[in-house]
Length: 110
Image 1 (spheres, rainbow, N blue to C red):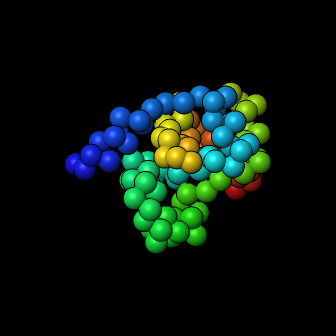
Image 2: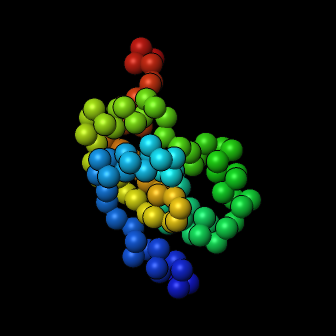
C-alpha cells in the first residue's frame, strides 16, 4: 500500500448530509456511484489520473449531485454518507437504504 493510499484511507469517514450540503452548493461535492470504491476514486483524483477520472465522469459514475438529489437528501435528513476529502473536492457515496435513495426521480409506476 502506498503512503498516499494509506493517508487517504485514514481520511475515509461517515458524514451527515448537513455537512456535505455546503460542499454541494459550492460545487465541490462529487458523488461516487456505489459500484466504485471510494478510496480508488480518491486515489485517482489525488494522483491526477485524468484518463480514468474523465472516463468515470463521462460514464456518470462520478458526478455532481442533482438538484433533486440535494432536495431529497435535505428533506429526508439522510445520514451515513461515506466521504473522503481530496482537495479541492469532497467525494461521497450515499447510503443505500432503499431504491428511493438511489434515484429519487425514478418513476414508481415501473
